[in-house]
Length: 256
Image (cartoon, rainbow, N blue to C red; front, top):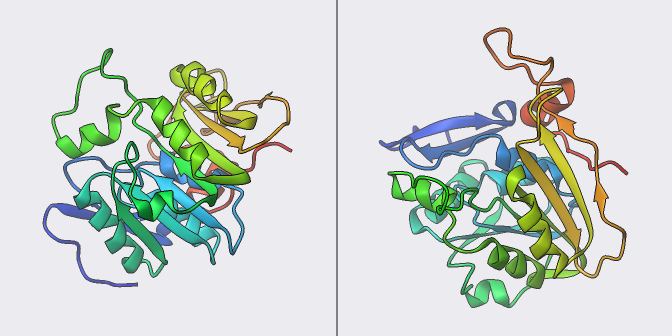
């Protein structure tokens, strides 16, 4: 791994307990645990192909590549500076990843000419008709929806091979909309709510579907991130299962 310091305006942040080093802008969109959880949930195996829509600085793809060596990882990113950062981070961590700069609403041939075993996405969470835009342009592009969620789902489904999986992470309040769009293109839909603590409502959900899937819809029991019913001391309070995923690169399995 390259030990050179990140350039001015960027920080180098440890993911997966330090197994992954990611350079990110100090001002702008900065990845947290959401792309780590998304990557952990993919049922990918060595030799398969994975498309990461809106890959940003590459966190989800590179977390997946660290957990499952031998994948063909391809990211599509709208913002050229973040696409360049994803390429840099792949090199920094010695993980093969192809990054294509382009708009998923009008994707380049490098993407449309292929189909993938798995497609994953962490689309913008906030519909700006009911929220305030971020001041930083990069952060706003990552968090404020401009391309409709329906377009993200349709694009993901089109680029997935028959029986391949599509996985999204999204805010829980947008699950009805996400399910409505997914049901038009995918089958075997299943939802895993991500719950901060026992007794709390889910804030995020993972939605998985399969191209040409025929299994009945499944709403799984919630997956809990933190131990206890409230935060009682400094430092994190992740459950054993969450710690294994966030610090050790373990998989996040949907219930069988």
